[in-house]
Amino acid sequence: MRESTIMKIHYGTALAAVALVAVHILMRLTMNFAESLEYETVLANYKFIPYALMLELILILLSVHGFNGLRVILLELKQGRTYEKAVSYGCLAAMVGLIAYGSRTIIMVNMGMV
Amino acid sequence: MAQVSSVADKQTTSSKSITLRISRYNPEYDDASRFMEFNVSYEKWTTVLEAILEVKQYFDHSVAVRYSCRQATCGSCGMMINGKPRLACFTKISELDSNVVTVEPMSNFPIIRDLAVKFERLFDTHHKIKPYLIRDDTEIESDEKEFLQSPEEVEQYIQFANCIKCGLCNAACPTMATDSSFVGPQALAQAYRYVADSRDKGKDSRLKMIDESHGIWRCHFAGSCSQVCPKGVDPAMGIQLLRGYLLGFRS
Amino acid sequence: MTQDENKEGVGGMINPRRYGIERVAYWLMRLSGLGLLAYFIGHIYETSNILRGQVGWTELLEMTSTPFFHIILSIVIAMCVFHTVNGIRVMLGHGGIGVGKPSRPDYPYDPASQNYRHKIGIYSAIVLAAVAMMYGLAVLFGE
Ligand code: HEM
Ligand code: SF4
Ligand code: FES
Image (cartoon, rainbow over all chains, first blue to last red):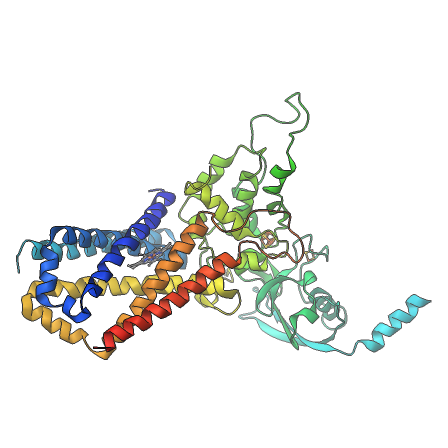
């Protein structure tokens, strides 16, 4: 991928995340903070499809943004063909891994598999 | 006769002095650099370069330093002065406000000897962005006169044309501090200088050249380049304006 | 002997003392980005505990309801606010917005890109982060 395409994705994911993360955090403040984290409340949140979709979206956006950010930092830290390849594919793998792991939680809870 | 007496004055009135610490290093023989200290007297107008030349003249001729114009025009005398990249000929000792003046070779440039550094990488990257007008016709071929520009069109790039290739910006840049493949602020600012020139038609090829993994995106707008530039080029501005094209903010 | 490039290295990169607030913002942005990424990974792991049912979830809630974790969370709040606000400033800057416009340079050559608009942006990111952190501490420890 062209570097400009990657960086446009980086900025785009950041912008989209601003709004969604704000909603996600404000959910903790619509009621008492501790109460919002009680098992039943959280479970209900996960089962509410629009909210679950939002969580999934945040998961994808921030994984892409965060691991690309890590890639940028590592690329600037050290250079070399093998190193740079390892960094790029390593970050991509970590990104996919985290998305898969997080999606597992969201999907399983949403479908009532707990 | 007035002149003679003023020379005599100089010798008697120069009461202030500083310790000039010069980094000495010859990669062929030395394992590490070490500092040599000299006591140098100075006047309000004495530059760091003059102090170094005085050391060469009276104390140790073997100090290696590169300079030519002595007036911030040739871009030869960049070095770290008290930790920051500056032109030795453009920095007065009095303005440093310190009793100790430490001079070291410019960071992020390989050392030849003492204060002299290699410029190959800067010249390479500068060359890579095609630092000349690109277009199909020439002034000679087309029957018309010179390529005309309005004062406003000149204003778009003239600031960046002030670059003297001294490399101070590359020495200050945080990305250059660790990235051996980065194009660097000097070359990126020059890419903008030509892209912004109304006579130039090479925008697409230059944008393509800098849009790679160690190209313009490795700039994070920390602005250190602009803070050290002795000619007001403001490379950080040029780079962000250039990136504006790639992000679709400008066309 | 391989040619030593004499690069400043990470120490020179993060040194906050030489080049003003813009350079400080640069490395705070990195630090907060990395901190948030670490927290994000932890957070995904943390929430996966809900798959262990009510017992597992409550166990985890208890484990993270200590002053230590509350302080960590407050720092995360501060990092998040700084990174977001400064991120918006950086994105505008990268697009060439608010970086001044070219002109004939004149002594003493103050760079137009290092202007008050961006400095205000950086300072407000820091202040907002501090305020949010204080608010977070109040909520977390106020109960
Ligand atoms: C939601 C609001 C956010 C915004 C507006 C935002 C914006 C940005 C921007 C513009 C950059 C590029 C900085 C540069 O090139 O100098 C960046 C870098 C980065 N971001 Fe974010 N970000 C946000 C959230 C996050 C989160 C939640 C994480 C963690 C998962 C994160 C991790 C990173 C990392 C690791 C970098 C690389 C640091 C660097 O290059 O300086 N960001 N962010
Ligand atoms: S942009 Fe300024 S600091 Fe950089 S090489 Fe040109 S004159 Fe020197
Ligand atoms: S000697 Fe020419 S720039 Fe200093």
